[in-house]
Length: 177
Image (tube, rainbow, N blue to C red):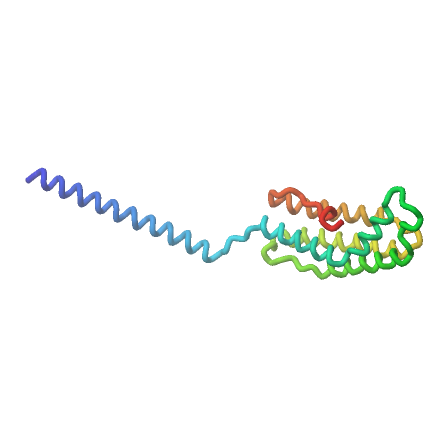
């Protein structure tokens, strides 16, 4: 009989412990589920890359004439008939101006609210670069060096945002040229 009572009490204790542990696990799972439902997890890296790609696409949609001009103007051993004309320069100026307008209307996604200030500063710098190009291309002998410096500063600002998210800094210049 003693063996039976010892066995019965051991089974009872085992069941009680099992019930308690299941209760604790379900409470932990419920808390985790509530946290996930309350605050959806923002994937900053994914959103930054998406923003960067969208930015490049917006520029590429408007800068074809500018890229064409730059390609002609920087071509080594170009024959006189291959050099850009005043008409090419005017089209490039319009193209650069259109890019500047487009960039000035860019909205930072709400998912990137932590990076908003830095991203706005970078986009503003990119827009200024394109506006400098537009203004310079209205001259008879344009030099895009100052605009290129401004573009490089924007690249640096954008790169810092990416580095803060533990991403490699992108090169928008390579995407849009």
